[in-house]
Length: 376
Image (cartoon, rainbow, N blue to C red; front, top):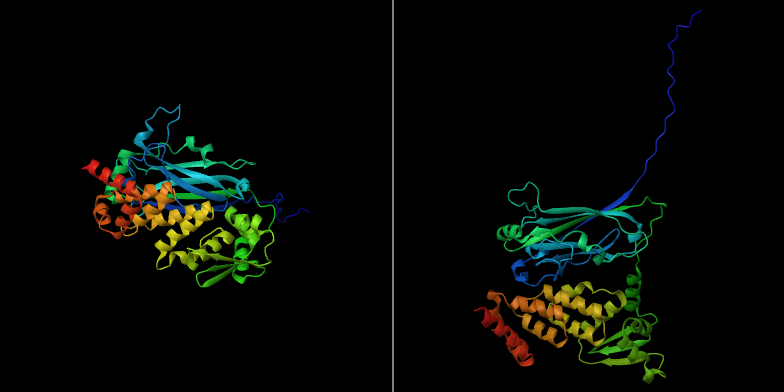
């Protein structure tokens, strides 16, 4: 008897799987103002953005207003271009990144991608850069591969005219990581927070500083590890038979400034309230002096960076005098460029700070006036 039931279709067994790649995207905008002031700084001279972090390390952007130094194999005139580089500064998870994609774009004052006339696309560079497996990459290891001919100065001039001599460089970084081997997520280090709490609580403190009418309790071994000057003061030959708890009087320093210095020693950062201080410029100038006094080079550079960003007509003279006295080359250069603006020089010479600068640093004053007369 025939079987009239429908024939069942036998389907092959199927299976599926997925390969997951982790990626982290970060965006950083580098705002460049008064670009014309940078014209003529020289080939190979650059300014840097702030250091910014992604999921795979620390980076910054470097802008060469007059182009990067030419290499022997390069036939183009780099001085006719503005060079821009993305620089890898290091990071704990650099070796874990499979690859890094990035784009650098020029934005106008409305944060729109700048488009050169007659071209459909904006001036933009894109590249996939693979991080080595077992080495720390230095920026110079890939400087010459890209970025030298980022944009012609003649094209950039169009952007500067329409954006009041300003523009923004936007970097978009995408870190493509290897597939995670474990679901355990290790948190970022909070060592700086623990040390900040130790400073705040004063537990185990074995040295007391008297600054003005305030007392600061600290830990000798932490201070000595961070500053050779503190090490000499706390563990020098004259301190071999010191009491269990030392008492040290600090002269010529405000309590606020010393508190900021201790905060840096314990956390490698500046406290948040340093930006909100009513006399922040004067306080930061004093902190720079303190950093130089205790041999804290990173803190000194952080102070220079803050003072550069806070420059105004009233403070530039005292800041320049400070830069001259403490050999702050970069800060000195920024101050002189600021004063060189036609709208600034006249007002600058009317300030009390100019009188102070003339008395304390007459050669610098002469340099400023000679440059001004030479331009007339």
